[in-house]
Image (cartoon, rainbow, N blue to C red; front, top):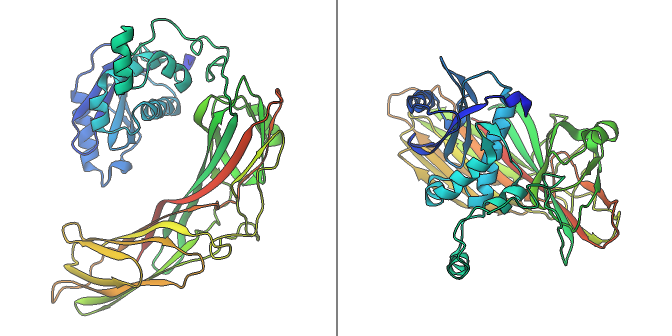
Length: 456
């Protein structure tokens, strides 16, 4: 962290809807709240909160902001520092608070503000990162207490949520792993989650397409396990980012992940897809035909197989005990072929302000139209893989004598699917190198939408 000399001056947590300050922590002198007003003025001019630039320069400060759960985390920096390092650390603060509070919202921050301040105090010293590993932080600052802890404190006399002395985690040789970990049942699980970002033009062509993936791990293994993980096709991985436990040299040389994992859940790695030719398990075909002051609208939605590299791939849930057992790999299933259902399917249609009414009827699911926002929500739920196409059809209207609006009609698609990834990435094998105890391991793949926009 030498690059962080005199890094964060102050940290503010704001309500993303109102701009009210929920939490403020000053590390290097008092920072005026006028800085927050400058930031909020910029937020007010943005179409969406997500569109605010991550780094905003002012006359005296650089403002780094991260949006998480309806809360802006705003870090004020008065000197030039590596921007990605500051952004990554603010994201780490948000991740740690999610571990403590469940969700980072104004309500959770207000209800547990003492825990939040204690965590912020331990994570940074004079604005410089000090401790960012959840394993060590949980031992020093205990999570918010429940009624059981409250009763125990009445009898033990210990009321502080901060440890009285440094714990073994804080002084461990491996900072991300607690010392002397022991489990009666040893197990490790992986989730490969991929998000599809896509923009489809009215003529059906794909204007933009990207896949972002995350490998989550939940580890409950005794001792200090040294693990080696193989993927079935690591060539699909581009721009990888790893947890500090991963040995980078081994991955750069052999495309193998060698690591000593933290204890508990953590994010092992992130990546983007090397190819941009991936498709989703659902296609949407919209048509809009204007006639006078009304238009006939038809939106057809159906499932389709996911083809990866000329073959259909699937990552299935597998479980075994022992060392070096395969965890799944190539398969022959996809949406529409092996019976897997696409879940949580919904389509949000945003009509331009000129539209005064909409009368649309679905062949499946239900429709809710909000006249205030001119937004229509078509909720289908789970779609069987082998089902026929579904249609949302009807008419929309503008004021008599008006011309059809120039603004496009935008629709946003949402879905999730278990057992499939767009890239076909799967965990092929996992080995425990430095111990011989039996353990259970499993992997799972999840495909879902990120920002999936359809223009009509």
